[in-house]
Length: 358
View 1 (cartoon, rainbow, N blue to C red):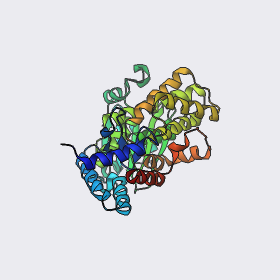
View 2 (view 1 turned 45 degrees about the vertical axis):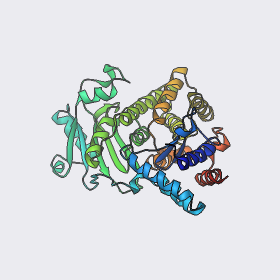
View 3 (view 1 turned 180 degrees about the vertical axis):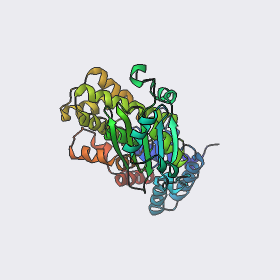
View 4 (view 1 turned 60 degrees about the vertical axis):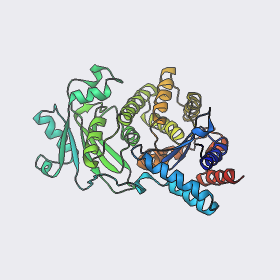
C-alpha cells in the first residue's frame, strides 16, 4: 500500500536534493539518493547498528510536517544530532593508559622503548598492556607494502591515553623516520579514533607504519569499541599513501596537507565522483606547488573514494585532526567548489523547508 505522506515528504527531499550534491550529510545522518527513482531517498544513520532510530525519526518528522515549519525544523535538528546524543559511548575508561608493545622486542629494546614512552617496567602494573605480533602487522599492511618493508619483527610500540571530549588526537613520536605525527593523527581520525594522546616509539630508527596497528588495538581495548575492518584498512591505506607521496615530492608537511585537504572536501560532500576528486587533488596540488606523478594522483583518488564510503563527519574530523586542519585553513586554498555545494547547514535546512511547503 502506498504511503502518500511518506511520498510527499520524500519528494520534498528530492526537490531539495536536486539543488545540491549527490548526497547531503546532516550530522550523523546521510541523505542518500538513487537517481532512477526519487522514492529511494533514505535517511541512513552513520552508526549502522541503530537503523530503527532513523525510521522512528523519519516517521516523527512526517507527522511534524503537518504542524508547521517551526516544529519541522526542530525535527530536522533532532535528526542532525550526533549519534552520541542517542547512544552511550561504550565502555570507555579514559583514566587508565593503554600500552601496545611490539611482540618481538628483546629485553634491551623493550627497556629503550619504555623509556621513550616515559614509563618504567614497574609502571606497567598501572597500565593495560597488550602486544602486537608481526602476523598482525602483515594482516594490516600486506596489501600496501612489501614484506621487506614490513619486516619480520614487531617493534613499534604505542602508549594511548584517553582525554576529555574536544581534546582531539595528539601524537608524538620517537625513533620514527617515515611517519610524521600529522600522518598518524589524520589516519587515526579516519579510523574513528577520538580524543587521545598517543606516543609512538621504536627501539631505534624504524619507519613506524606498523605502529598504526598498535594504536588502533590499544584504543579498542581502552574504549571497548571495535574499529571496523573498513575503517582500519582505509586508515592504513591513508598512512601508506601519505608516506609515499611525501617521499616522492620531498616534503612531508605538504603531503599531509594535500591528503588532508582532499579528504576534507570528500567528507564534506563537495567531491563525490572520481572526476570531482581528481579536480580537487589537482587544484590543491597546484596551489601548494606540488608536482604529483600520475601514479600518486591515482593513489590519492582511490584512497578518497574509500574514505567517502566511511560516513565520516567533517566537524569531528577537523576537531580530531585539529593540528593538521588548522594548518590547512591557514593555506587559504581555493579549491573551486561550486557555490551551491558550500552553502551553510542552515541555508540547506531553510531551502529544504521551502521545498516541502512549495
